[in-house]
Image (cartoon, rainbow, N blue to C red):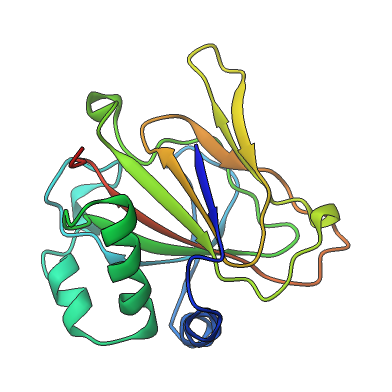
Length: 193
C-alpha cells in the first residue's frame, strides 16, 4: 500500500467533488454479485478490454480511457495526474466512483482476478471535503491468510494505491457520520514497471 496526501490541487479537488455529486449515480451497486451490502456507484471507464469481475453486459466499449479524457471534466484532469504518477502513462481500464453514507455497506472483494497479481493496481482517491476519524469508512487490505495486511483512513485529498487483486473492503461507517464517503478508483490490470 502506498499513501499520498494532498497530491491534487485543492481547487481541482473542490471542482471534482462538485462535478461528481452532479453526475447520475446508480443506487444498489454491490462490491461483488454475492454481497448483501449496496451503495451508490458509477463507472466512467469500463471498456471490457480485460477480464473484469462484471458480467459482459456491464462493459461498454465506448467507455474507454481515451474517450473519457476527451470529454473534458475535472475528473478527467485528476485521472491524467493519477495516470502519470501511478500508472506511468498506461491507459486505465477502469475509473469509477462509490458514494456511501451510514448504513451503506461494502464487502470484501478484488478489483481484478488473481491472474493479474503483481501487475494490477487500484488507486483510491478521497475527494471528501472533511472526514472525522471517528466516522470509520477506512480501507483494509487482506493478506493471503485473510488477515489485515494494510489499512488506510479516509482523509480529504488522500490517494491510496493497492494491488487490485488483493481482497479489500471499506469498514462500516458510524451512525454519527453526517457526510458522504466519496471514493474514486482508478485502475488497470497491466502495470508498466
